[in-house]
Image 1 (spheres, one colour):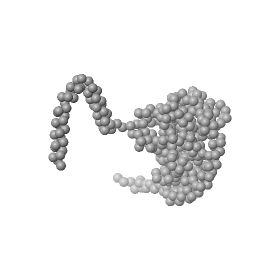
Image 2: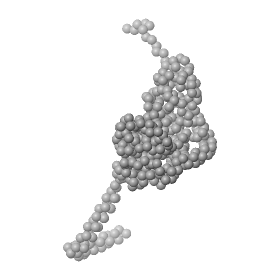
Image 3: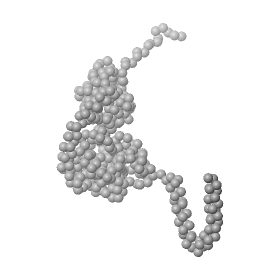
Image 4: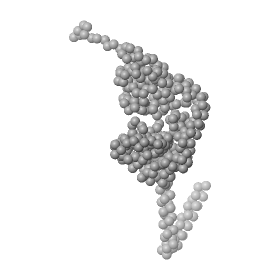
Length: 399
């Protein structure tokens, strides 16, 4: 029986994107707190591809950026990653948006306007594919000035680090033996997991030294590998896990030149005695220099970047370090993406056939020089000759 007035019509939800706000000025900190469906509120000018991919992997519903996604200084790749993943992006809210939006607040975003309940609290620009395409093109036009600045920075970096780059002075000596062995340096860059999976045959058969850079040490462990060496920046807010640091044979703590011993005290508190590496290079580049100075036979880079766009996108601050390190390491460095094309580690049937034929020929030669072998050869010669003659006649008959 239906009672009049007992049924209420549900009020339709207001249009837009709904989710809990997660706010942090440091995007690297924010990523660790994100949950699927959250709205990420960041202040990240010129977002790079690795950061954008981390936001995609976290399953965010939208990204609100206080700063421009593309400033025009260089063609950064982050916005395009978010576009391809279908994540709505809004930017240029201004720095005050990070204090106006409280962490955990339920937000609604509609047409670039941000609502807390019914109150409009911020307005930004919707960044669509057309905006990204146009601004990236403009950034490429203005790239010349960035390259000129890069040239100056490279000269300064070489002046400061010439003893390290030219003579290898200051590189710590590791317990792990590197000389004459292949080395795999892993960085949590774009597609690093796929690249690592692509060289699994190489790792299994060649037993290279594995170097995990920063959080890649934990990434290697998650993939089923044990990093022999961990390279981490002593001043980073977050170090690799205690398990990764304690299980490694060598832990390299990167510090600025002349830094006090107290910089590495946090390692001592967890029972790890690191080797100090004083340099202004990035952790990724320090790992490459370490492998090169140790006379590695081959260095394979996982998660590193080879194209000009990726190079600029990843290393805005360490561009000179990356460029000069690549020149130093040069002939020994191979991108992991190329390894499956050069080495697949598979034994094909034709290889087995060649080995079998070679073995039979060697056996026949060995028997042939013995007295018994001579008797067998004399007895078999007429039979073999008749068989070959018959086969030749049949082949001629076919033609």
